[in-house]
Every structure is written in structure tokens, then in C-alpha cells.
Length: 56
Image (cartoon, rainbow, N blue to C red):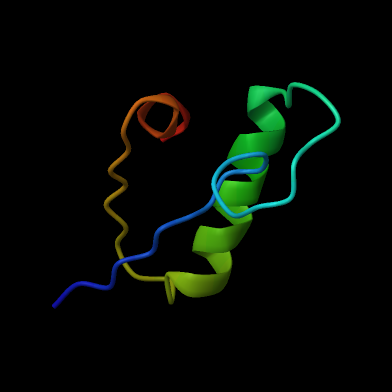
């Protein structure tokens, strides 16, 4: 059984626009915090595409 978590990176899709480019460490910290809050402490498989693959 798997649980799918689809983050919306800052400045993309439905998130609030940023004032300018965001550093990768800021985006990574957001994804990391989301996984910490939602992954229930179990094993995590991260799959990304384009920028999401680079962050993951």
C-alpha cells in the first residue's frame, strides 16, 4: 500500500507567486517539511519530474 503526496512547489501551479527566483535550498526545505508532516515516518520513495526530479 502506498500513499501519494504531490507537493506544489513555491511559485508553481496553485501556490502563491514568489517575488523572484527561489533558491533550491528553500524549495527543498519546503518539500522536506511536507514529507516530515505527511509521510508518517515510514519509508519514502520520492519521484519527481523536471525541477522536482532535481530537488528529490
